[in-house]
Image 1 (cartoon, rainbow, N blue to C red):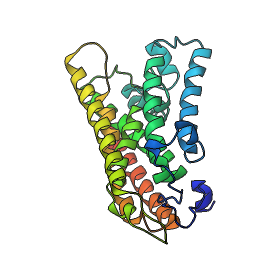
Image 2 (image 1 turned 90 degrees about the vertical axis):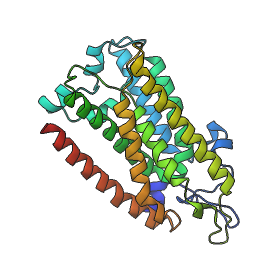
Image 3 (image 1 turned 45 degrees about the vertical axis):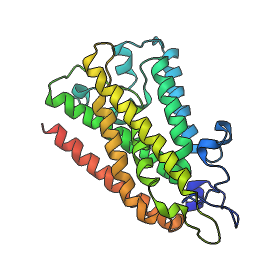
Length: 280
């Protein structure tokens, strides 16, 4: 599959600014109609669809969608350190990011994924968006397991897309800092720097506020928020953005190749981290 097929983007016409993936920037995502984003953000809508489909499947198979029991969450793939480490069910590292603890949990995560995805996918492409979601979600779930193992909280159950969502926020904070996106290239104007700064600021505020809410929940015995999953996903997203910065304005082919190398490297690092956790 070539790079244009991977990104599924139309090339910008001369005179139009373009994202690194080649998608034309007629209107920046923050100002674009949410329902106009399907063509530019197919991976985002695919991820939304999978999460919603899993949730509906849980209900069809008898789970209470208002507040699924721990047994139902485990049955459909939620994260648990005992099941992963002792019983070798490592697939839960991936499946848990598609399982949600009730309708409100699903709705809030999907709203965040929708908004961040419409902003992030034109910068990452289809392959990049899927990779960041999976790798960040896996990083968050692995750190959550490590925390539970270290503090011997083996009965904890974790689920949700929030680690992956924080990862998307993290990589956006890095990518939107690239001033070269505002420079003219190939006869096309760049993306206005003030727009990039405003978008980056909004992502930072989103991440900061939600991390603060999660940490504050430690002092209130109302709801358990998996802060380690949030932090793990966020840090992974930040780290994955760094090697992509130099190739963001080098053309779609070089950018995609850099993504493949970088994401493979992070997948290997996460595998090593998982092995380390299993030896604790």
